[in-house]
Amino acid sequence: MTIFSKIIAGEIPCYKIAENDRFFAFLDINPLAKGHTLVVPKQETDYIFDLDDTLLSEMMVFSKRVAKAIEKAISCKRVGVTVIGLEVPHAHIHLVPINKESDIYFGSPKLKPDNEEFKMIAQAIAEKF
Image (cartoon, rainbow, N blue to C red):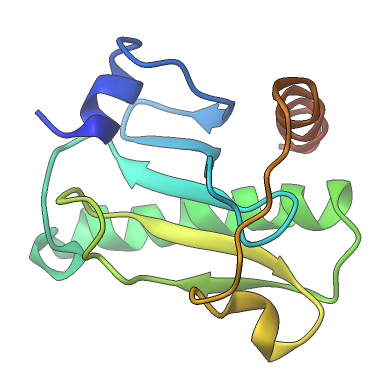
């Protein structure tokens, strides 16, 4: 069971943004930017391109809804989208509020929000979802 499956199951706490019967969105705890969110399928699959076509397309549509909520809650020019897929063996999409290309560079130092800031960010995005 991956760390993301444990988060989905409620075994590990998270800053939840949204969920439905197939997907779960929550704040990245090592964010590149305020509002950096992960979208994962509830089905545990390592590689995003191993998801069946229907699930993959539904994941993108769910991610779009999350991105639109992020745009309403966090000041940014765009929400960048990336899939790296090496960090956790569970398919996931990074949604990162950006104002310039370098804002989505994963080699950058990560932000260190405290618990209260994480809660405020998650609530602000969730309310826009």
